[in-house]
Length: 140
Image (cartoon, rainbow, N blue to C red; front, side, top):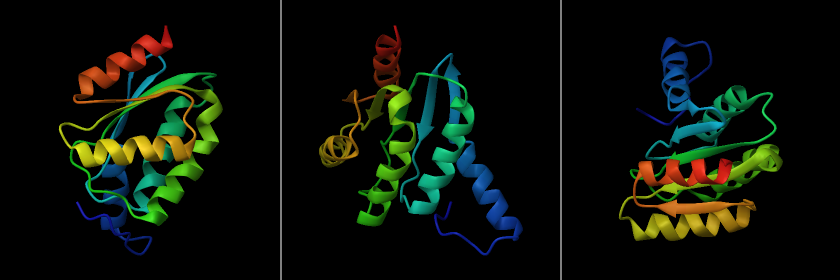
């Protein structure tokens, strides 16, 4: 999948947006999963967070896990957009858990980003299953 936006109105643009939206889903009550694309951009962040906001609408509290196992370090503009989007939902977030695999660089970047974003509760894990379990514990 390309992460570059195409002119609106093209079939490929709609397909790309739908493919991105399918990367965010409800796992169970108040728990969501987000699978980040390898090369993130402000566009991909917006589509993923639009979907997360849509799914979590009406919830006073929720958690989500993020699969970062195949990502590259995001650029400054993308990190800024992530901060903006998280700030819109941060008061409702119980916990955010990221799965980074064995990538120590992404683990370090995720921790720094979590601090800069201002997550109230954050953890990093090797696997998605561990990340989901951390969210479940936080929601209890």
